[in-house]
Length: 453
Image: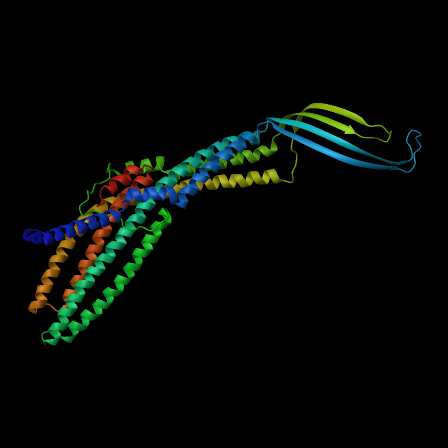
């Protein structure tokens, strides 16, 4: 019994430890971090811009069906019923009776029209085919935009969280320095200005911390625009990531690829082709059209002036030729209008070419400069940490003032912020370079996802 009593506390401690461990594991699993891939999957199902592009693509396919429909047979059925009242006042014809006659008339007309030659409709089919291709590329571009937009918003949340963490860390450090300066002032070992400097710096850091907290909320709301829900716990970027230069390193190779494969370039080239077809379609307003029409009419009349009804079936097949001669200058005006729009589309293509050239150059240089910047700022952070340590020791020994220590705290905070931002810029510029050349894929997101904790 005595042995059992001695073991009971041990068993109780063991039980409590196991329960605490299970609760801890449950808490970890319940708050498991969400990574970039999971965030992107949510955005695929919830981002309004991307979903809207899918509907636009489907709508463009319907415009192609409508263009083909204009050259297919057109069948119509017209049904009419007429109640006729005739009041014969007088007549020189003895056959016609004087008086009022009322009779119904039923008419059924079935008509089939088949276009044989309508150049405007032929051009419209070609134009709709180009529009359908453009819609496919626009959907492809929307998917790439979603990848980059999700990554940008994800990294923006992480960057905002970093700033908040840095400011809170600096706030603790400044508070510690404020306490030290206050104590030394009370002991007569420091000047009043040291205490006042620390109080002013603490107030400033506290305001920055509040601002950074709001920045985190704003970044999370921005990410919510894509995913439909607020992020709860995002995976952070690992401390060590592989910094790779663009492959190939030659900028001109990237520019050539972008000019050829950039989705905006392809879309604008399609826009030029569509404008050219529209110009040709409007010019077709001067051309004749040729249709074949088959028509059957059944007419049942309940009476006539002669007093008797009739049933008549008419069947007609006709070849209809139509030549527009003058419509008030409408066709000529539309032709001039579309000619100007065609010229504008070509200028838009030139503008897009220059824009893509600039974007490619900026993204390429951004990747290379970010690598150098990350390496330099990494050294700067370590240097600022050593400087801060030396300034603190110098303050304790009386070699440095409190403001020197506070400035070192601020410089370290700024170096950490710049270092973190440079890493995010490296990742985003890598994605931008892929996107501007039209080669951004989900594998590129997965590569970044592997660098998350």
